[in-house]
Image 1 (spheres, rainbow, N blue to C red):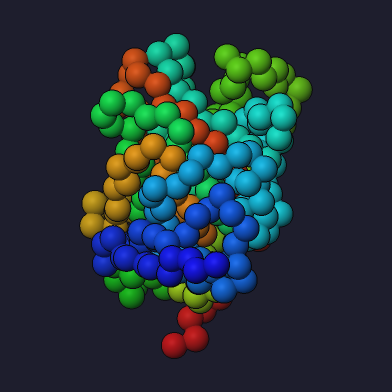
Image 2 (image 1 turned 30 degrees about the horizontal axis):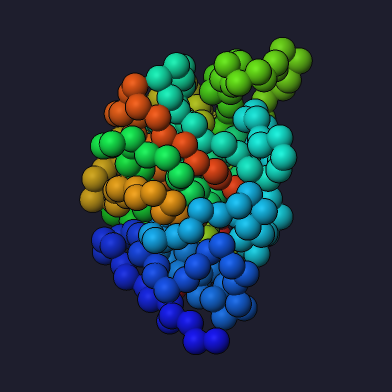
Length: 282
Ligand code: SIN
């Protein structure tokens, strides 16, 4: 059977690609998988429009081409399919997932490789997601700052993020211990070999081997730096569009600017490796 050829259109010089000619609800060919895998590592976030609504099984199948699924340490999953994390914000929500800059669950020892989100219900306006290139953020630093940061590690904690976060969805977490980990501030992408800054305002709490004051000052600089508009792409969702982002080299922010309207979808998250830093070969 003839099928459309997959096309890739970069969105900004730094980040993002629109992919067309692919129905994500169907099994992926090996060739298409390889193209998506390479393009994801290069462009950091892929956008797919004009998609059919994926069943939970189809979305889990799509995620599993890229690796085993990640189990979220706090969020409830869909009862019928534990691979699905329901993204849902409405007029009675007390929090909205992802409404501060973050790389998903960077507090885990092995933070997620990537995340695939399909939104089924959108507000009339707003509810965009903004993605930022951590390759571009690293590349924009001076050589002196790059060398300094490459030696450093930082704590990514989550108690302050997750405790009671999902109480309104029936999650009781009194006896739970939430993850925290130490990660390099600069991580090397295992596919591209490029360096990416790996600190985010949500989870990164302290730079190791520094005083509190030194750490706060340097993190303040880094948080402002990674959130600069020139590293960003902004995705305006359409019904059943899909965004697939690489948490190893991008971070994101989901705008909650549409209250009291509702926004809903399904996310699958792919397990990743322990972040490491390797000096560039060049
Ligand atoms: C998230 O961080 O997973 C939420 C992203 C979004 O809802 O756009």
